[in-house]
Image 1 (cartoon, one colour):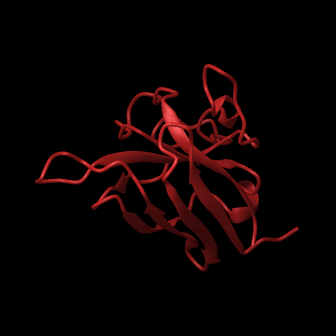
Image 2 (tube, rainbow, N blue to C red; image 1 turned 90 degrees about the vertical axis):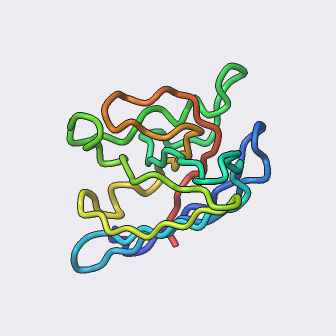
Length: 147
């Protein structure tokens, strides 16, 4: 089956229930255009900058977890090519909070939409260092499905 568009609705977890938004994916001639519009993010207390959030596609296909980790079934970053971090298929640029809102538009050529259908989108509460595999301290997710 061929998909040229997909979207994921973002909804906050127990810790940050006001987070919501939409991430869209559109195949174009040079790759996949990703647009993220996220609202209700925790705001930075630093008046000079916004807060950075890790943003990834994870390998899990379930938006469930357990008592210790409400998003345990999201699993790790999507990495079907066995590349080192930060070159996993699921590694995306960070989101930058601006008064509780984040907007990102980026063109990626490392996957097709069919490769990510049914996977989980995660917003991590800490920025990615682009070196080590990030900790599993994430709190926002949603499953992706076709448009």
